[in-house]
Length: 235
Image (tube, rainbow, N blue to C red):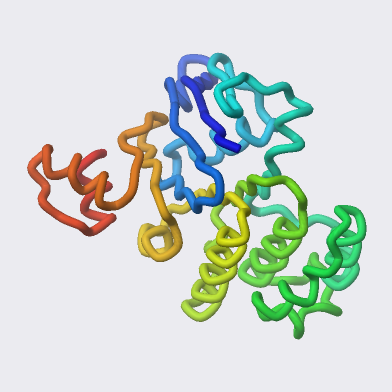
């Protein structure tokens, strides 16, 4: 399924959080939404995930505007900073999610991939930020929607955990799960993403592979293949 954001705009009074944001999400890719804090990444994710209405613009699937019901069937949104079922153990949450969504066979695989074994009997409300990020990613990967939106999946992770999360995301994308990741740490994005959408000041400043964005940056006088330098050149 090819998804498109088409001229999404969101205003809060006189402040425009998003302005005519347009880009595509290709099947089976890991697409990184890159931008500093305050660039509009979370607002955009909330619109795509159906949590927040856009003031204008549309979300398209295969060129056709989709309804809220169709969007819910296509996209699962994993917000930043949430702690669902805080009094329940991680084991309970994974078994509930696996049973509810109908694919409990993935649980053991995800526990192994994300090193969640030592946390299974911990209550979700007691997990650290990095532990909760890995736990929530596992829950998100148990869902059946073809597109997973994950807001800041690397936040709070150490180097080893970031590597494990990146490897897990890549392996599930290879199995035809499409990932859209909101990331402000550019090194994490460069390691895991196939393509990038550069967002700054609520506007898309570039979209494409690192090579494609590098060519655009070169036209602005910045001859570089480094994602950080490309982002700075285009924003």
